[in-house]
Image (cartoon, rainbow, N blue to C red):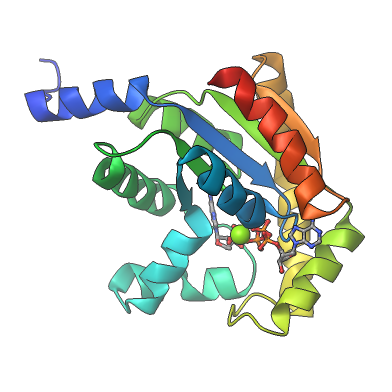
Length: 205
Ligand SMILES: Nc1ncnc2c1ncn2[C@H]1C[C@H](O)[C@@H](COP(=O)(O)OP(=O)(O)OP(=O)(O)O)O1
Ligand SMILES: Nc1ncnc2c1ncn2[C@H]1C[C@H](O)[C@@H](COP(=O)(O)O)O1
Ligand SMILES: [Mg+2]
């Protein structure tokens, strides 16, 4: 017997499939959030950062929040099922008013990308923001002076960078092969980087 899918769920899936979805990936501190803010201001897209969703879950003191607090504080990846459930719920909450989604910080592993396509829809493009590990480290250490993020410290940055470099090459290869990857160099000033992001986005509008 097949799995029974309600008509509401079918309608939601159809809407998600018709909406533009941009994955925004890149190392810790590369500038994903900064670029997403600028993109939202210009294009009116909806920005969902998996890191922000997970931090909100921790702040809520829910059982899931307690489960993931140490993982995040130490710079490791939160289990896929937890991230994808939060992300899907957040997307469904916005689907009726959304001009397009910027999914910041997802996927972190190929498996996350595959599950997203199964549960939600394929991405329109994958924007990767690239800069050196030194630049990322410097940006995070500067941000640490004012951010309240538990993972903005030297020891955790080492783990976050290791985690990023270990899992990212296969992701790049996977989306490059499908013609979906768009690389944006991010060593320069945020406005220069934004200009490059716009060139990529204008093509899919
Ligand atoms: N192009 C840039 N030049 C200089 N500083 C930048 C640039 N882009 C961002 N920043 C600053 C803003 C922040 O204080 C810090 C990290 O940027 P941010 O957008 O928060 O990165 P991110 O979202 O990729 O990091 P994380 O993965 O840790 O959430 O660097
Ligand atoms: N997509 C994700 N998968 C697993 N874990 C994640 C994901 N997005 C964020 N996280 C966890 C692990 C990260 O170190 C922290 C902070 O994320 P950030 O994108 O730097 O805000 O959250
Ligand atoms: Mg961020």
